[in-house]
Length: 272
Image (cartoon, rainbow, N blue to C red; front, side, top):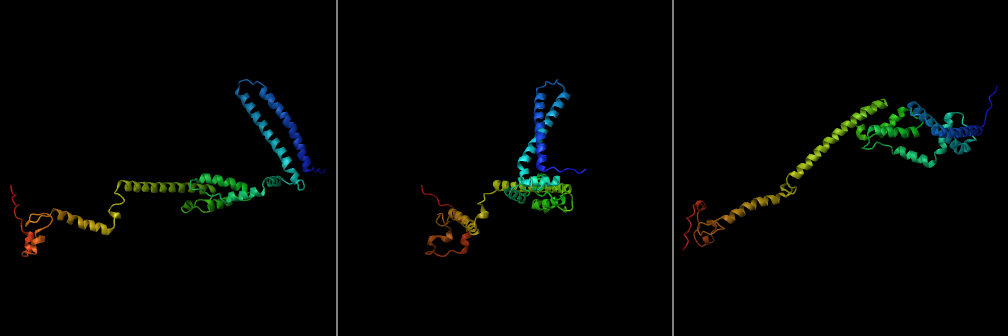
């Protein structure tokens, strides 16, 4: 007996009519069930919850079928799908506009691991986009994409090859994350120590920042000026100069060099 073929529009129409009829029955049963007083029994309550969940699932299927009939079938009546895979691909093709395709390509190109993103978070995010946009690829392709989109500082330390499994790569990446965390923590501690030492130490404009000529001049002039201010001549008993620099030396005899080392005379008594 030869199996008769039915056009897809007619098949969908029959399915929709059947589901609509079932939907009306579902609504009636749902209202009856909600209004029916059940005893306070755990089994009855569980049965009621499960039944209501089944009703919600049937309602979802009914809504999806009606949406498929109104959106999809006018576009594909000239090319009937031969199997379920073709049906899914054509259904998704109707929902994917050129703008959506461009947005997906941009989303894929920008999908890279961020500095504050762990390897687990990144793998989940990458895999969700990969499943949506790279339908024909295998897990080996996902591993290649993972290596290309991971952070460079992690790749420099990792020793896993692209032939490793996804779990092995994630495990090693977690270990590398711990190493990088400890390294950054040590760097922060060193930086904080340097900042504290600069705050509690010398003034930044100390001798290290003063020019060498200024330092030398200050070192050379300060003792001389202080000594000159406290000097006393033992010839005239006036301050400000020594005996060899006495102003009247030019008109008197020239003193020998030992006068510098001669003890000064006792102080001159003051007149009463």
